[in-house]
Amino acid sequence: MRGLIVLLCSCWWLSAIPAHAEAPAPADIERKLRTLLTRCLAGTDECQEFDFRVPAETEDMQQVARSVKGLIDELGEHGGAEVLPLLWQLDARGSFDAMQAREVIQTRSMLRALATRSCAPPSNEEIAAERAGLGDFAVLRAQGGKLVAVRPTPEELEDLSYFLVAVREAGPPVGETHEPGGDWRKPAQANASLDAADAELRSARLRGDIRGMDTAARRYLVLLGYPAPLKASEENAYGWHGSRYASVMREWAAVQEDLGAFSEAAALYRRTSPVDGACGTGWEITLNEQILGVIRTTEQHAGCRGIVAERLLDVGDRYWGDLAASPPYGPTRLREAGFDVARLYRGALVTRHRDLPPEELKRVLSAAPEPLRTDALRRLQQRGPEAWEKRVLALEGFADVGQRDALDPLAALALDSLGETQHRAVAALGILAGRPRSDPCSKNHVLGGGSGERRPIRMLGDQCATALNPQERDAMATRLLPLLKAKDGQTREVTAKALGQLGSPLAAPQLRKLSKDPYTRGGYFSEDHTRTYPRYPVREAAADALSQLKP
Image (cartoon, rainbow, N blue to C red; front, side):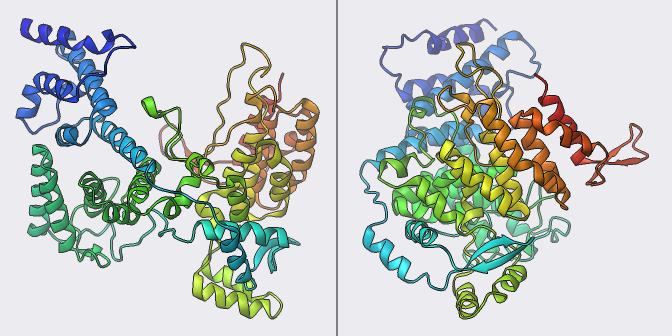
């Protein structure tokens, strides 16, 4: 054990380096890490050295785990392609930090490439040409409680033209490719060939043999028909979160990226399903990782125009070490290149409601007056639904980028939309205009941090200069109050939540009337799990909102 303690002492150099010291050499970090993990790397099982949170045999082992984590983080901060084999070896043995370090390395690689690639916004000539071909486009508006198809306004056409030029080179949506026949409830019979390819992949990962991983992953997917649509019904292995072929495809995308095969890596990242198993938890994290991979690899083989849609999702709002000062994955890259980001979101908003089920969208377009009816249906057949608003989460993006300028348009959208589009508009407005936790002009102000299920939205109340005063929040609440009488229970629910966020006491009388709202969705188990009780989400949302209205 004394030898172990000596090794520990040699690793605390990480925290002792002065801020001005020269960065440690990746080879030195790797050598120290391999020395600490000699026992772990000699085996094939998950290693205790990767988790200092679980009980360990000795306090020394917990300190080893802390040192290992610090060293892996250092590999990410200072390493390059030369340390990727070791990171794969650590991932194969249960390290949660190894792939995060790999992602930091690949992010830095992308940023170096950006300096050598041009990125130009739509030109006036491109916009004019696109606009000339939009005579057959129909925008969907809510009128009299239903959607109708009408011609866009001139302003909408200008914004839509700008957006469509910007996304002209976009690939298919990330993670939405359907491999026919796959069903976790009906796995195929045992398949020795697939099992052997999977064992080969695992063996190569344990060795850190990236080219061997490439060969094994390709063999696995070719057995299922790749590059054609996979014969997913032949998959014989499913985990709790998804099929083995999806896991292999996701891993192969990362391997292709590590080998510099950026075009194939981008296609694989786009194609892989983030969830196709019995449990849906964690799918959003997986999807976001695939989106980041698409952005990195596309930037390095095709440039920025191919991933405008993915950058508008702004999924890279997270800690990136020394890269955090310039978020590498969001719309900052577009803004710095001269794109009008707010206009991109406005253009996408023109396509709202087009994420309707196919038959319903066709029905709405079929009710348009001629010649728009014929033109719009022909366009639908040729180009598909063009549901860009939902794809780039333009409602949330417009709220985040527009800030105060987005308030009135967002309120209008909340009142003049239907279904999920309306619900998202109301929710975005509640976040954007929400009452801050404390006085934003005080030195002791606690940031609200914004929120949003997929696309983050910065709160106006986080800054003294932008925060709404009580009268403005009262006015916004007054505009939303009629939605508490909507026939749709989900509309009443999301409106109650937004009114709670706004914090206007004017909403209290109407919210109290919802204490017996009849809308139910789902239920609760009794403590002994012998009975279920209905859940009343509007009542719950109203009660929670009333609690937020208290001073």
